Image 1 (cartoon, rainbow, N blue to C red):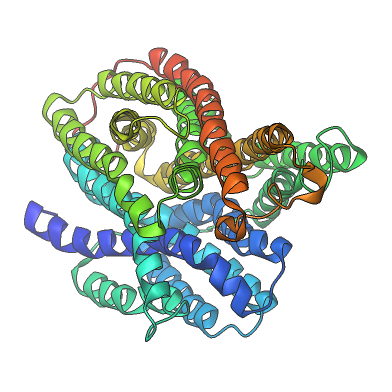
Image 2 (cartoon, rainbow, N blue to C red):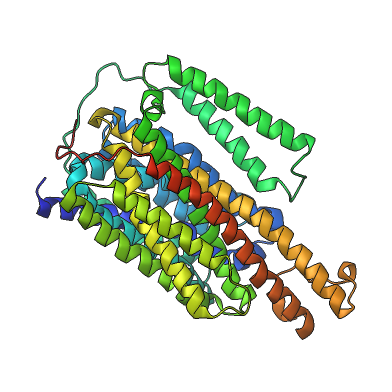
Length: 498
């Protein structure tokens, strides 16, 4: 496909990717109103998010493998249909149980769209030329990440729309993308005889990952880190995943090709993506909370204050992508990216509830630049090492590990934040002469309903504790630096296939 045809098809793919990503961020601001409207509990509040994340992460490698076996265009059309139907169903949900069930289906569609877009772009464009197109991907991801909460807040606060439109808003854009892709996407599909899908391996991977993510979700909230529940869930997950590895090593068409994952560069790219995912998702998720609770900003103001993060991703991914295409070299930009990411988190680790917003903005800008330079280029490293027949499984594997890293990062850092906040609030209340057991300051986020002196204690606790989790994020990002340093400095190939 020439540049004009690539851009026509790419427009539809970028709309699909944007809608898939924004659907997970647009709901975040509206969730308190959604759960209140449906008379849900705090446990159900968590599950509305977790259900989608579980389904999306666990199904990613399966969709990637199916893309190697069947028509990529047909799979994308099926995924779009799945996403549209589930989004409409979520909007019409009458109870939290229904909403959670529909969000599982929506998660399957989201996981499919995110990996299939990357696989199709890789099937259209050679690795060397793909760098400049990856800049568009980075821009879409940045706008979706920051624009989602802003859009969600606007929709929820608009009386004639309401929270249900947080789900409906994606439908018209997705249908437009479906029509565009049906007309403009033309791939040369390779028919493969005697195709076999490894359903046993896929089921074991999904079960093992789901159990691990369930443990990450509930640990330190429903039970302790060291407890019989932890032993059963972690031990069960390790056992199931060990069986999955055994199955994957024996079947003819594995879901995750172990011979690809075992190679040096793909393995290092996956480790680096895992750490970048943990650091980025785990750290960035709590910025909105820092601005709203720690600094007293409104949801809309919090979204606007995170613009430096979006700007960093947008500019760096575009510039780095063009430089990668021009030089054919990718390792220098990855190393620079993960080093800047680490420095950004180190800068954010110094913040508290009174830190100058200029310093916070500079830290966020560095984190955004680091993510933009490293995340898509790590996918490029892996895609450069595999033939076209294994492209889907390889792309699915690295996307899966990045999502898994993000999920674990959010859960673990969230547990650390909750522990730090609880300790600081207890100490602050005691200094005021207030009995912590008699106050609801540590158990509710309804700041406006608290007396002014307790409000100050809670805001200070959240503002000061956030710096601690960014220090942990910096430590996680260092793993990505080490993995990137050991990547082989190779030139990207000019052809789509090996």
